[in-house]
Image (cartoon, rainbow, N blue to C red; front, side):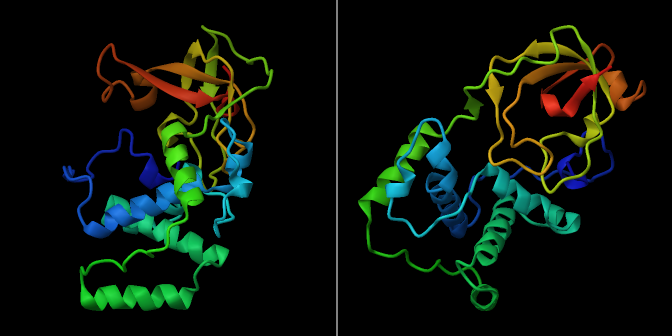
Length: 248
């Protein structure tokens, strides 16, 4: 992960502000709802488990949107902006950029709305359309209830077994990855082999689009942070995809 998404072991970052409210501003509920609707109407659901009749849903949203896409938008931000902005402000930036990139809105329309809210302040968001389309509502609700499983029904034998020594690869930095940065190059031991193969659909550009085995890997904390910073006798565990591991 890029620096702002891999802070394990870093010191001197200043005080941490623990926000107790789930939503600080009213618009944050709206952006959460937009994200949930996008996931429930995502084109990838036609290949998901359970199966959804997404091609029969009369929605204008025709693209793929998953947690991976949301995280891509956040990780593409300037690190200083990432630390400056709140959680749902990052969501707003990523989703807005996606809508412009895919042509659902223009940059001019986004700039116009941005300038309006910067000028008018924290006013109520634009009212939602009154038109209801039950097929869309039912699809989103069904998705929120059932989700979609990353498990895939393919037969791939794991490369490693419990007790095997492994080293975490130093993968090229991609637009988004599930590899914690502070584990790159660190030695560990396979503690658990998860049953089945899992995908991170649609996957970032580091190979995770392929369903594969995954493992719980055990690390000696001293190997990660050194003798001086590691708590004596402590153990660190991480769940990692097979593509991130090589034999010790």
